[in-house]
Image (cartoon, rainbow, N blue to C red; front, top):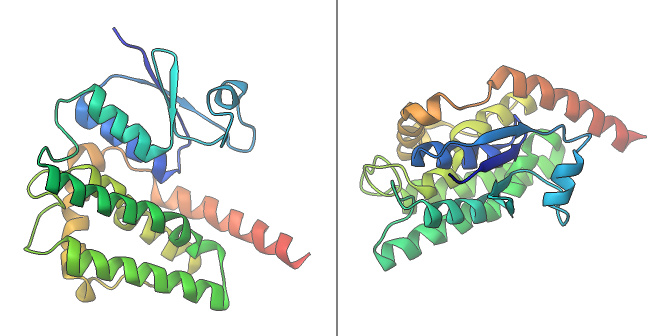
Length: 223
């Protein structure tokens, strides 16, 4: 039987993307929690380029970058497919996955910026929400692909869970449900899926951690 290991960190949305994919596929795996301030020699060995989590190790072979890992999982274990079989639908799904991947590093800055820089990040968030509302979730779809969760839903996990965390940490409100009813409905549907609901990090714990991190970053900037 294939041995699957996942190196991760408890607060990383990128790690949860892989956890959800493995669980949706029913793939047993060993989870190794990494201390990102003191990375293990094994993590550095498996991911010598970026030295980041997540890293999936399948039969001793490492795969890194969350979207690359998801594509690999979907190809190796074809049950419960995460991408559409139809070539056009698949191309559309891959477009939205790339859209989310391109936005995520920018929008993650919300909690650790201030003033004009923070307003620029808010603008990115609103553009992302508007694109989801007006172009991706049209037709009253339950999920991006219809009635079943797929890789696009997983790609937008920052919106589903981490946006609220970043808002609480930054002390501001970006997402107003009445302005984005389709997105609001999708968030509820996504977080109601048992595998998602049962495998989410504790919000209060992340907020407390990010507030400490923000204080440290702002202190180092002022020195």
